[in-house]
Length: 138
Ligand SMILES: CC(C)(COP(=O)(O)OP(=O)(O)OC[C@H]1O[C@@H](n2cnc3c(N)ncnc32)[C@H](O)[C@@H]1OP(=O)(O)O)[C@@H](O)C(=O)NCCC(=O)NCCS
Image 1 (cartoon, rainbow, N blue to C red):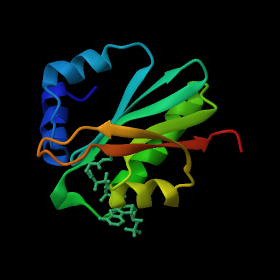
Image 2: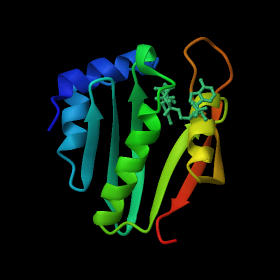
Image 3: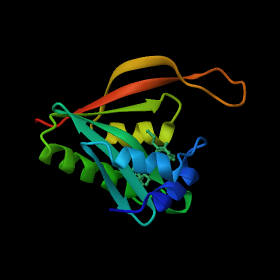
Image 4: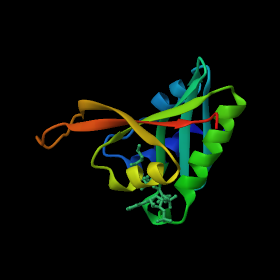
C-alpha cells in the first residue's frame, strides 16, 4: 500500500484544493476503496453494491502525456471488475479538457450533469460536473 503522504504530495501537484495525508489515509481505510499508484501518479477508487467510482486521479505535471493516466484508469477498471463492479462512474469538471478527452477515449459516456458542483476560489462562477459512466459488462 503506497503511503498517504506521497499520495498527498502527488495530489497537491495536480489539484488546486489538495487533500491532506490524513484525509487520504481515511479514504484508504474505507471498505471497498483501493488505490493503484506509480511513482508519478495514482488513482483512488471505491466499489459499492456492484458499482465503482473513481474518487481521484492525479498525474504529476512533469509526467503527463505519456499514457500514465490511461494506464491507471485501465488498471482500476480491472480491479473494479474483479471486485464485482458492473459499471465505473466518475465526476469531472466540464472545463477539464484533458480529463474529458482521457475518459472519452477510454469509452466513458456522459450520463449526467451536476450544475455548479465545483466552487472556485477566485470568485469565478462554480463549474458544472459531468457524471461519466463506463459499462464493465460488455
Ligand atoms: C487528466 C490527467 C490525469 C491526465 O494524465 P496524463 O497521464 O497526462 O494522461 P495520458 O498521458 O494517459 O493521456 C491519455 C489521453 O488523455 C487525453 N489528454 C491527456 N492530457 C490532455 C491534454 N492536456 N489535452 C487534451 N487531451 C489530453 C489525450 O486523449 C491522451 O491521449 P494521447 O496522449 O494519445 O493524445 C492529468 O492531466 C492530471 O493529473 N490533471 C490534473 C488532475 C485532474 O484533472 N484529474 C482528473 C480529475 S477527474
